[in-house]
Image 1: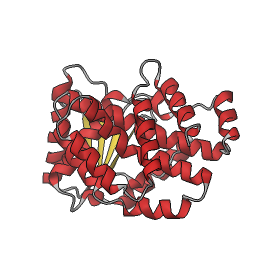
Image 2: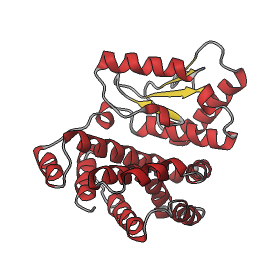
Image 3: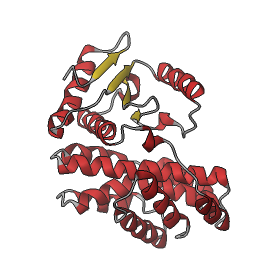
Image 4: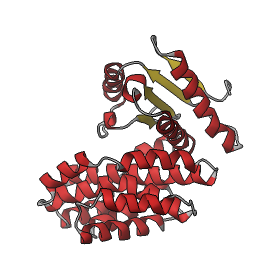
Length: 275
């Protein structure tokens, strides 16, 4: 394992926490059955340290993305190889089975989305024109593309884990994510009257729905229960809004072949013309 993965722990990291991260990362590597390129996991002690790192890294590399601090852990390939960042403070108090799901999830991203292609987005003339036609200027279009890219990559990461026999950890993680949607509801109450901002919020809501649909597609027994939980958790969306999201999720699931950028553009075009 040491030859395939590098784990760096900052000063003050709890030894048991470090051991668990290494063990859970190894569980995913053991299921891949193929060599892994250089992969680095950095374990940070505090959110302040991680935020300072991200600010400096983005400034150095000219990276413009959404706010990473909303996630339990993060992944990128900004420097040409997969990296995972885990913060001990961020995960403090989170049950172990959910943290296991987080690490499995990030490892799947690292293995399947470990090149810069998955973190650099193109905006073709056609995409920009369709966006303008539907009221999205470039900054708003960029937000839609970012949120949809997150949802699509999450769907692919979860599906890969499910196919490798690790669906159990993603069930635990997704159950946790759908257990509290207060923040999403508060956002929706503010933006639902805006055609543009409402569209962007709906794109963000696909982050949980698409992985659930992916597990349904591969026959995971608990997946339908997760869908029922999603329906209840997002019950503050109107029936039409839920139906539109489910229909769009199904159409996105059917986007196969081509490069990630091609699939992403098709998903964005479908999305902005559907609402």
